[in-house]
Length: 270
Length: 118
Image 1 (spheres, one colour):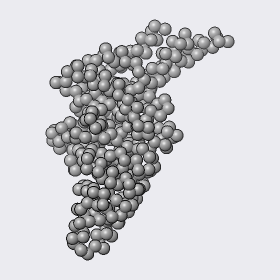
Image 2 (cartoon, helix red, strand yellow):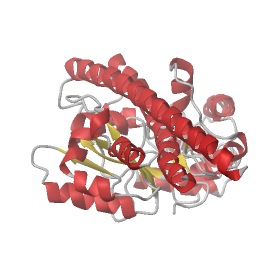
Image 3 (tube, each protein chain N blue to C red):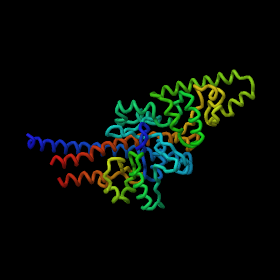
Image 4 (spheres, rainbow over the protein chains, first blue to last red):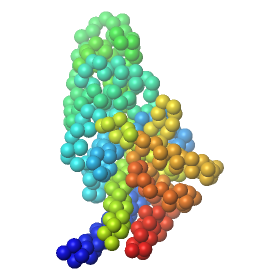
């Protein structure tokens, strides 16, 4: 029985390896297509904005990665961030983001820093850290503690609601304060923790500092902002294309793993 | 290994255009010692620098995937062929000037060689 099943087993391993090789080549092709589209959009952005404005010269010295992979289990999986939903919506790849069990655990509490700062810290202890992190890393994405404390499991909708609440609070606080000096102090002065509001944060003010629940959020550090506050639409398209390329690259890495296992298993079965 | 739950980094040894585009997705990272997870290769980058970056990224515990342009990988093919660890995974990607060539991919070459032996 063992000797009769061994050729069958070897054939199965061989066909599995060929399938993995085919999948790997398909993903490489998809990766190449996404990269090609990204390079074209990048060239269009350089034409529109100027070659010096879209180059590695704009890369800040301090960076914090918002796109990471998990090695939960056996395979790689991209940790979702604000850019990856664009990939899911616009791309035609069959994204294998994460296994449901591994996706639920790390994403809510330890997701990478949100470029849109949608994950507003729910506790006051994280606010000074977030603001301090924003000061230290003024060119890059916000510091990790700001996101770790948020615990947002659905950043897209939950973050939007919090932003709306912050806007309402800020509007109310500005209307209620009649004293000009108090308004200026609330807007520009430090809070009790000794942190300064971020200049780019539209909610910097008394409401953001006084109300601990809706306190200062970390400065959003979306990489797109390295190239200016107003970027060409083609640069945003390039961001989407390269995001798809990154997702394809992670999938290709998984296919590569399966492909590397095949010959070893086949050799051991011989 | 990276802090549990925080995720591992994606390192890159790529040309300027690939780096600019991929950094837009947020893969760039620099730690407290100003160590970055990417190397931008241009005409002035020496092979020894590329080899040094390859060794560094393949020995870092916080790197899970290493992206490298296939053209650049060809210059350090001896290191690519000698590499056999599962993590970080090394993925050869096309560049703006050179498309992906399956015949140059170290992984596919290894699979072809092993099945050829069997």
